[in-house]
Length: 462
Ligand SMILES: [Zn+2]
Image (cartoon, rainbow, N blue to C red; front, side, top):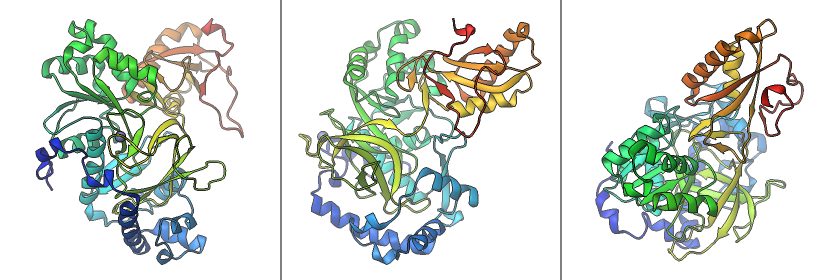
């Protein structure tokens, strides 16, 4: 296996990374249906999950020949994959490649504390790299560019190693610091190495720009960065946020989007900055559904819905009709750039992830730590999200109930201990506030919302 694709540098002056990006609907359909049919034969002999699913639904794999036929197949939801993983660790009943052919593992940002793990063969790595390269290329990154890595490099998330692999594949050079390395270190590398591009979450790149004078003694726009490819959260597509980032860095911001279950990046914005094109129709079939009725709806400008993805050609962890949880609006179906993939913006995800200074944070993971510290704590916590949306550059407020037998006089020590444990385990610094035992409702039949948006009526917050 090679790190860099053959002839990577020759792609520098192409209009698109791959011809499929500008193919007609008929051309795309021909490619997709051929690959769909071979995918169905592959699943019929390799995937226990889909053998079971198809049998339950009374469908033959050979009956799925066209895009329209796909609508007969039941959805795969995140819980299906979690159940599959639990039934057959480490890669689940949807592991479809031989174990000895699997060379890499990535973890998705699961919403219940435990992530979902996906496996890759060498062929899967090349496909993922190819897809992400198209996203980076659409966003203006070119072979030969130095690219500062501002997404999280840790926890097995696809914003880390797979992004690095994709940049390497396309002939760019990744500077692997990562959001977890801290804004200071990133800015230092930026001043030392003068990368042409930065990748990261939009709000984190904005935060970096604000810190630049203090850390490197100049304005962010004096660092010579020309391109910012952002993703992982909404923001890059919100004009007010985009303008702020572009002004701070004097660089063009393009948004990209993907997800662990299908790849890394498979949608990306072009220079028109009018929504993210589908760039990878030869690797993924994408359907738009009405999340209420689950019916397929056409990609028409202004339409909203949830994206459903089917991997075609994936070896290790293929999924069919996977409900992404990404809620989107179609921003256009044609573009001055010539790409034909519909353009979308994502306005929400069906999960509760928070992003604290560029680091993904799950309230359930904080809860795990607080629970591990009983009886000093009562095992009960809430995140008090005193900000709009899911992203903050401030310290995240974490309210923790002290244990029944703990003395409030010991709070400073306990706060320091919880803070250190959270920082060590989750790579962000919380603002821990101790509250009395039994302040919050106990878990019951209703799922407890670990994140509270309204200011809780407790004296500690007055
Ligand atoms: Zn375009």
